[in-house]
Each structure stands twice: as structure tokens, then as C-alpha cells.
Length: 404
Length: 164
Image (cartoon, rainbow over all chains, first blue to last red; front, top):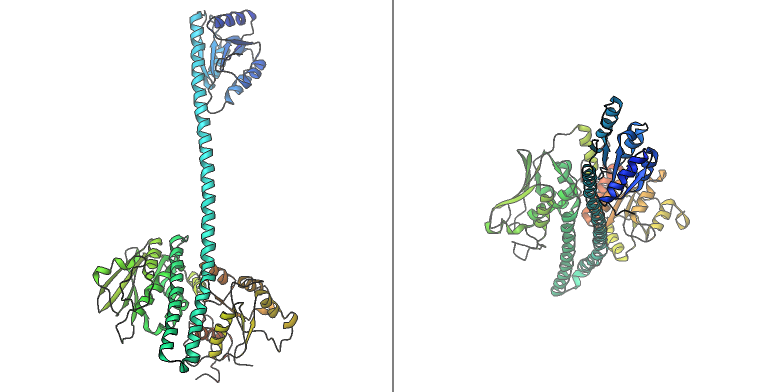
């Protein structure tokens, strides 16, 4: 059995040719296998073949299609070398056509008769050399396939692990949302009931203690909610849609009892226009801005809030303006960081609200900022991509959609 | 017709039940019925078993539905309710601890009128009653109440005798 990359199949119908060729190649250290017709060559070359050596007579004797098929069905890396020994002497049109056809399909080298040994050996050797290179390419390709497959497998494995982690995180925050908040609510609820029902028979100190319990439970509940909201705007998949800002603010106010109770203090300069946004993230953002505007008022004053919007190139700038305590300039950047508070600690707050607003806006591709004069109030602005004007039917649909 | 809408409160947590009922009672809502889990909620609405007596267990106008309950979740009760042709006049509000957008979306998709994150506050009850006054002419509105939104249909509110 010849070494891999050394199997030469010879098609030479004439017995004398075959014997001579085999002898010459053996002298050069190359083993050749003789086939006497095309079908047996096609069969022999099917499993392992490194070069074909043909005589012109064998190709023109008919059934060349078998050879062309064999050559056409090679894998991408393979270009089987074919050495063809011409008949020499007379030139025959049919034979020229057959050789040309083969030359179009195959990696063909012609060796003219009369044949010198050195010419034949060198042609076969260079054919085998070319074949070995092809095997190297084949092996490299196979390695690459294997590497890609293992990479894909690793990516799939890690994706599955990540997905599991995300699912667990989601299950965790779901149960936090449902279960962890419940006892806090009960705590503040009953403390309030005590003050309401038994307040008259309690001395002021006892009432103060109860107030403190209720406040602490509410603060903890708010903190839990804010942390959940922050992680939600951080990780949620945001799909933006065209939204009417007037309806967005209506949804915000309806969803937050504190805002609903104070709605007469909030002036909306309608129409605010339409933007590209994600409704839950917008609600998170604007509810925090509005709650801040309600909260940070000068002592003894009623909050007064104005919501307006103006187009800016391809964007809409929404401004929430208050006449409250205002924010010192050196705090303007800090207040958007998580757990950062500019306000004095007597005003309740978790320090997360503006971080939620900023994260939500940034994830929608917008920008947020503040301008403020201490003592005169603040203007928080949010810039979002503008949306084109809708058909009336679409507007009605989105109105119904957002009412909840 | 009783001008007060009848309320069914589906709530498994005793403390939440107490606190929510208290807020409803403060709004002088007298006809408040209670079920303790999702299965009971469905039995009540279907008038099955102990709830067959519609005099003692009348069909509610308003259903306040907790989400996380044993038996069936609030989502399942609502989705069941939507398949009952005879029960489409009941206005459903979710009353839940969860502020998860996925819960909100599912409730909205199943046709909940509103989604209230606990605790239930007097402001919520005002909003519910205002809404009810629109769909149920003659229902009582709280005197101090401001309409929570604009009417979506040609339906006009009829002021009830109690309205000041």
C-alpha cells in the first residue's frame, strides 16, 4: 500500500504502456496502480487517489463523462492533479476537443510523446507534491471546522448559563416585588391604623414613635421599589415606539397616587408632541422628575409645576419646571448618580430617582440635564428623538393602549 | 338599584385584606364581599357551590384582584373571566404588590380596567368610583372627586341624587 499522498492511478489500455509506466515510476519510488478502462479507474479513484496518469487513447475512447463527473464531484479543497500523455504524431480534432474539455475541468498537465523518463517522473512528482499541499489545506480546514464547532458549543453553553442567570435574577426581582414588599406595607399600614384609631388616647411621644415606624417602613418600601426600578431600566429590553407625550404624562399621573392627588398643581402645555420612546421607561423617568418637583418646595409654599416641550432639530426637549428650592450648581452633575442626594436629609428620598431617570433616558438614546438657580427653582430637561405625526386611527389606538 | 357599586375583593393575605377593606369602608363602600384565593374567586363569580345564592353573594360591579394568590393567580382569574360571556360587565382592577411591567402588560392584555400597586389609597378608590360613574349611570361619586380622565365614548355621566 503506497504512503498517503502517493497513490497514482494509471489508465493505459495498452498493456505495454502500463508495464513501462509502472516500471519507470517504481524506479523513482512511486507506486502506480493500473486500470484498463474508465469505469474501473472511476471506481478505484473514488476512495483514495492522489494523481491520475492517463494516456490520450484512453480519454478519447469514449465514456469521458465518467472522468469529468469524478473531477466535478470533488470537495472544495481538492483539485486532483491529472497528467495526460499525448499520443504524439498525428493531430486529431476529436482528441483535441476531448483534451480541451478535460483541461477546462481538471488540474491538467500534458506530457508530449516521445516521452523522456525524466519528464514523466517530474510531472508525476509535481502532481503528487501539489496533492500534498491540498491535503494540508484540507487538514487546516478540518481544524478550523472543529475549532468553530467547539467555539459555537462554548458560546451556546455560556449563553445558556447567562440565560439561566438572567431568569434567576428575574425570578428573584419578581419575588422581591411581590413578597419582600408585603411585610413593609403591613408594617406602615398598621402603624397608620394605630395613629388613626387610637391617636386620641396616645401621648404625643407614642404617636411620634408610631410615625417613625411608619416612615421607616415606607422608606424601606420605596427603596426596594426604586432599586427594582433601577435594575429594570438597566437590564430591560427596550423597544421604542412613537408615543404621544400628553398621553405619556397622563399615564404617569394616573399611575402614581401622589401625582394624581397633586394634579391640579401640574400645568401641562399641550400639545407636547410625539417622541420615540419606551412607555415603562418614560413613566419611570417622568414620575421621578414630577415627584421631585412636588417634594422640593420652599417652606410654606405650594408646589407649582409646568411641563412644556419644544422641537430641537430631530428631537423634542421636554422640560419639567418647578419653583422650588433649586439645586446648587456644583451638585448638578452629582445628583444623577445612584444614591446621591443634594437635598437635606429631612426631605425623604432614596437617592435613586434621578439615577433611574438618567438610565432610562440614556437607554432610549436620549439625554437629560438640569439648570437651576438655588432658591428660584429647577428646570429638568429630557431630550428624545421626535416621532412623525400619526394617522388619527393610530392615535386613538395608542390612547386606548396607554390608559392603564 | 343600589347606587353603591358592589365590590368583590380577592385577597389571600389577611393583613392586606384588613387594610384594603378599611380604605374601602372609609369611602363608605358598604357592599364589599371577599374571597381568599383564585379558586374561590372563580366559584363566586360563577355562582358555584356556596356562592349559588345571588342574594347573599351578588355579582359584583367591581372586582379588585390580587395577583399572587393560591389556587389560581389573579391573571388566571381575569383570563377566565374574559371567557365568560355573562360576566363582561364587571370592571376589574388589579391590586398587587408587583410593579413589574410584565404583570402590568398581562393584566392590560386581559382587559383589566386599571392596575393598582398596593397599598390601596383613598385616591385609588376615588378614581375607581369616578370610572364606575361613567360606566354605571346612577352610581355614587365621592363629592370631592375630580374625574380621573376624559370620557372615551359618547357615554355621559348622569349625576346621581347623592352628588353635590
